[in-house]
View 1 (cartoon, rainbow, N blue to C red):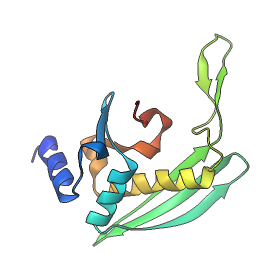
View 2 (view 1 turned 30 degrees about the vertical axis):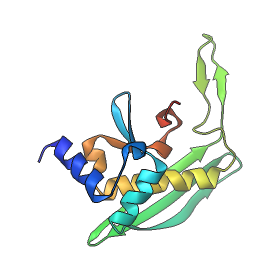
View 3 (view 1 turned 90 degrees about the vertical axis):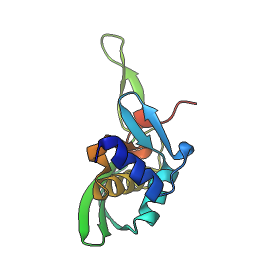
View 4 (view 1 turned 135 degrees about the vertical axis):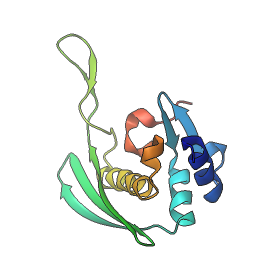
Length: 138
């Protein structure tokens, strides 16, 4: 089965619609709603464990199971913004500008767990919550 056929099967099996998926540069991005549709359609159970938390960083481990499949993965969030380096170039100092670090890390862990257990990463699919760069431009 080709990559395109596998993606189409995932879309159909999980009742994804146009608003759940979009193309971003070199990747296919699944939105938050799409991730949850996949989770429920594939009966993926996810549990979380807070691995690390500080004033400006958080790491959450997600454990996902679906039938005999099992994966563990992590989501993280580091508060920051953009600063100019010595060359005048703007660089990120973190991975999010929200102070809801645990919630952001949890969303990222969920996206990663769902995409890993469904093997969607091998198809070039990423979750919208995984990186600020993946947010859809409106």
